[in-house]
Image 1: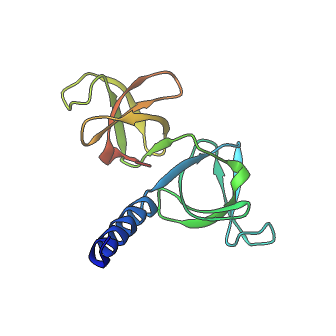
Image 2 (image 1 turned 90 degrees about the horizontal axis):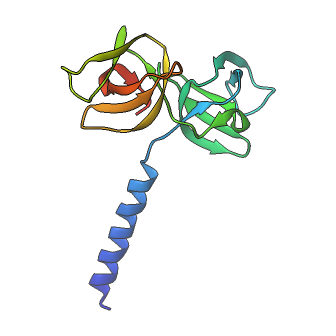
Amino acid sequence: MTTMWRRVLVALSLVGAAGAALAIDYRSISVPAAILYDAPSQQGKKLYLIKAQTPIEVVVRLDGWFKVRDAEGTLAWVESRHVSERRMLVVTAPQAEIRLADKPEASVLAELDKWVAVEFIEPASPGWAKVRHRDGATGYVRSTQVWGL
C-alpha cells in the first residue's frame, strides 16, 4: 500500500471516530430525586435536585459520575448510578401536542404543559418524534416543542 493511501485511510478513520465522538448521549434520571453537584464528589456543593424521568445529556464520564446538561443548559455532576439509559423528552414550549400522526393536521391525542416528560420511542419524519405519555397516550410530537432529541 502506498503512503498516500495509508494517509487517506488514517484520515477516514479519524473522521469516523470524530463522528462517533460527536454523538449526543441522552439519558434520564432513574431515582425519585437525584442531587446535582458542582464537582464529581458527594463533598461538592449541592446545587439542586432533579426528579425521576428528567432527560439529561451526558457530556463527561468519570468513574461513578456523569457531568450532565439539562434542558435549560445547566451543567452539573450526578452520580452515574442515578442515571438510566431510558430516553425521555421534556416539553420546552409553553404547550405541546401529542398527535395521531407525524403531520401538523393530525388529530390531537393529548396536550402537554411545559416541563412534562414523555418517553421517546423512535424518530419519525423530519421534525417529529414518536413518544409515549405516562398516561398511555402514544403518538407524535414536534421536535421544536421538546428537548432531548
